[in-house]
Image 1 (cartoon, one colour):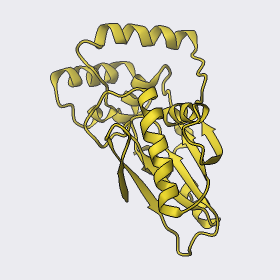
Image 2 (spheres, rainbow, N blue to C red):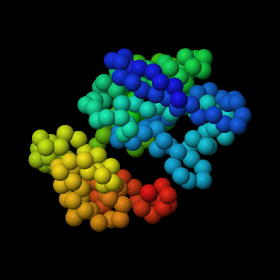
Image 3 (cartoon, rainbow, N blue to C red):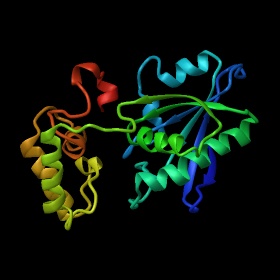
Image 4 (cartoon, one colour):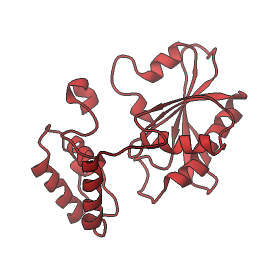
Length: 220
């Protein structure tokens, strides 16, 4: 793991994935979404995207930016991440590898913020980018817009953030109240973390994935 700081001195890190043989191709940076961490690209399946890239000779780097789940909650914006985190990560990969350019695979809010860095000209070292799930111009269904506004107005003053891990342990009575509400309203599976994720990120039962596409280990 390589630790570095963003332009506003926020602590970030990169995970360098090494294969059995030295890479024969240039660096690829994988960027996670909000509320997870870089190991989302290394799900417990037979072959992950990371495995496939390493096996094909790419030099794989995983970026952990400030929207990751394994740090204390912090207030951030897409603008701040685009300005500070991704340019610093790209610069660090270039510095570590000596490569003149890199490629990237970017996901969800990591994708949105990274694309903001791209169009602002803040990552000139980037040669190719694959953007996944959402990019520069999100289009929300009308029901999503309505359901976003209501909880923010009613829950915002009491809960400045939501954490799907409250399905495992709710640290406050407010968090327990949210978990109990989700128990009543989301019945799509037995995994309360999964159900709170659906409640947090949009509409649907579930919102983020089809359970038929997940094996048991990945779901857990």
